Length: 203
Image 1 (tube, one colour):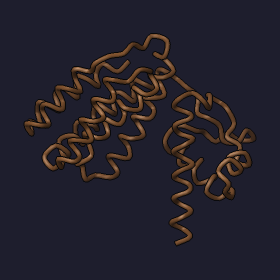
Image 2 (cartoon, helix red, strand yellow; image 1 turned 30 degrees about the vertical axis):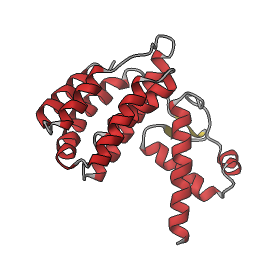
Image 3 (cartoon, one colour; image 1 turned 90 degrees about the horizontal axis):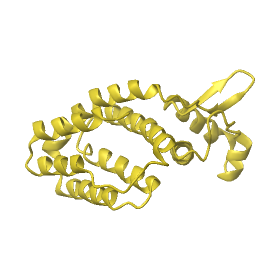
């Protein structure tokens, strides 16, 4: 039981730090100090170390000799690889998700779509956009695949917030709507086709 609790704490710390990195609150090369993090979360160093290892595995932190664990550098050129990986993996997940999506899962995806379209700032929009993209994959029974997709979407989110914050405008996403219409008809090929077109536009 203690081990499960420790994992839960580690997961929570990793998620909080990941979102701070994505939003730019923790900047590239900033040191992730174990003492400070442990104090912030009122915990020992053990779950903090585990959380930092998770961030390294997700490409959000790096461990450097004599410099400690730091926020990973931000390189816009990495987005070429991230886009290609998302294009390869998300359509696979969507193909497996659509046939078994429950009404509740479709409702959650539609709620995320609406929240995305009605967002008033880029941070809210990004969170709801990511929520939509994960929601349409909720039926996929491939946890390793979904974990990889989740990590890639975090990297995409970091790039988006760093690169487009000044140019963002409120928008209605027609691709999201088209995907939901196709999901409603259980038209897997149409949904996958729109998703591929949508992801191919990632800068």
